[in-house]
Structures are given as structure tokens and as C-alpha cells.
Image (cartoon, rainbow, N blue to C red; front, top):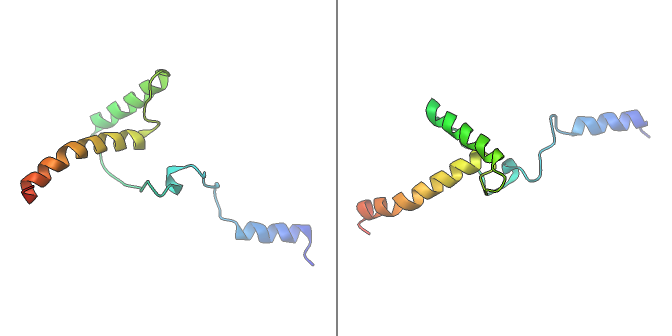
Length: 92
């Protein structure tokens, strides 16, 4: 039979190193995927400023973070541009 210290050592060895993932994080949400991209310095500064200002506007319904803000902007852009491009390229 293992001692309490030995049981803890075995339990520690089986656990993953680092912080526990949040159950509600985007990393664990199958609707989100990680992406890496580049922004111009001025665009990134505006993005950061916008998000900082949204924290001061408690009455508004704003994106919670950069991911949500970029998702909203790209979704709006693609919803507008895709039909035009498909019509042009596919003759729809």
C-alpha cells in the first residue's frame, strides 16, 4: 500500500504541467480556431484603443476581446464581399 506522500507523487506525475484550462475559454471551444496574422502598427494601436474605450462604456454591448472584435469585423466584411466575388468569379 502506498503512503499518502507516494500517492500525491503519482497523482502529480499524471497531471499536466501548467495552469488548468478554463472550461469556457475560446481555446476549449470548438467554434473557435487559433490563427496568427499580422496587422499594421497603426491598426493594432486603434484596435487596442477601441477595446480600452469599450471598457469605459459600460452601457454599450461591445466585443470582449481582440478575437471577438476581429471576428465581428471580418464576418461583416466577408458577408458583404463574398456575394460580389462569387457573382464575379462564378457567374452567379
